[in-house]
Length: 458
Image 1 (tube, helix red, strand yellow):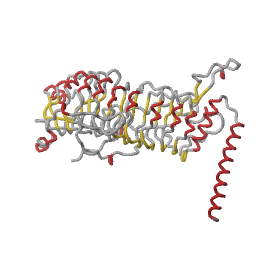
Image 2: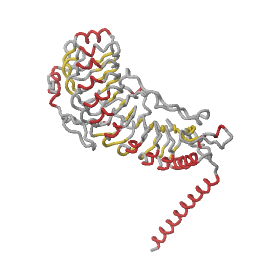
Image 3: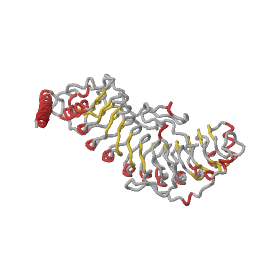
Image 4: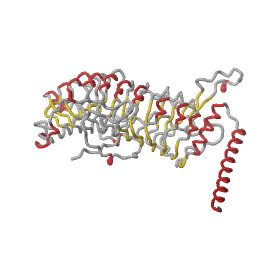
């Protein structure tokens, strides 16, 4: 009985403190003067977020005090796109209401979580948190951000399934979730959204690439270093008008390269290295006139390197096809390799006369035998994100060699120095001279190369 009484008193004490804190907050809000209702809502959201931060080693949020949220480090304000002109005001500076339009805390190394109050930032256009230590999930209240154009949560510690609230953001164009711990299926609805760039690399996504991949109008698609499995959907050919780069490194993919890749006339980077792909390299790649980087290394591809690849000059800069089972190459391709016109890597194949090839035993093994791609039934995923079917089983990849928490992606981590690295995700530096202005919208996106994938089993 005394113990029960003790816990009851403790409960009353905590409850009183919570209520007192809430009363104090309400009192503070009443004392503060805000330039607009939107700025007041932003203050509530940012103060709730500040309370959800456990560590801020560089003191990014040290000046997050007072009603002038537009002066907070990493917070950018701009004239509202929706508020009416204030005709009653005599000052031109207040004729249009200001709103919080952007948040950029890139590389702040902040630890904490995202509170639901962030949904009060309904005018937000840019939300950049690259390279921090935020954990947990993405609040459902983000669905209120109808103007959100860029969402960058990369290189954090977010967990759980794909944040489906992303699918309810009507203005979103740029999505970057790379280097987190998201898992489960990639929702098929993602590819029905009008996005321009999707970065999902270095997570724990599984259950294949959805069959409706080709519905997406993206220019850049990076899935590297997941455990997707299944095939590359044939619908990829429908992305011909927009797709510029696709990176599917180390995704446990099986099956053959779909013949529809020939339709990707604007594609400059095609990288499917470190998978379990079989069959030939389609000669129809000759149609891919924009191709600059072609990497099919460390698969189980067979047959002869087609002369069509060599007809991609002068645009083709690098062709990497090492660690496969190719049994020959067209004379024209051998000539450009020797002449240095294209950077090539042909190691560990079964090509007679070339140095550093596989042993005769490896080249006569089952892995080196040609396959009939017409017999593959490639259904990469179901609409519900279930396991893929139809592809031959392949060994599970070992993620132990892939760093879970690398620094922000840079060119130094790339095993492929010929692939141009990306700049940091679009952002504006937080400084006293710029913090009252929104970051400029980015004009183009390029992939950041992932860390080196694990080597194949011997």
